[in-house]
Image 1 (cartoon, one colour):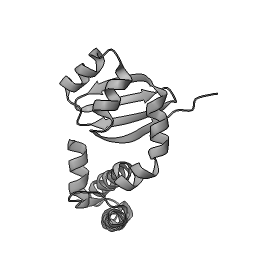
Image 2 (cartoon, rainbow, N blue to C red):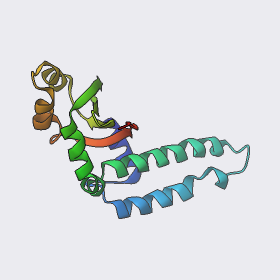
Image 3 (cartoon, helix red, strand yellow):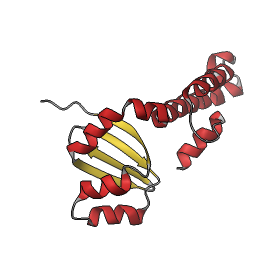
Length: 148
């Protein structure tokens, strides 16, 4: 959740993420912080490189959790969650679930007690479908090539 709030603050996003204003803000920030804008040896050039990487990462992250992106990919998401859970891991408030089709999703804000309930449930995917998937912000983390 900290990461989401940090990027929302960087881009000035109040509540819901809308792609069109996000793209405009992204372009403005990139223009302002592009490293080529500063002379070689300038103290601000190093800062601009760090800031531009942060802007690019933030933009791609916010696009991946935007409602428009999630609804556009909902069919593929449904296929993934119905394929079954292959692996999972919990770090802090982040739950990573890799599904049988090779796709990994990150779920943000999943507390340790919820994670413990999940691993103690006798039907892992059923618990996740009821308690994790509909209640937490998520994004596709990676897609592995699975041979047929």
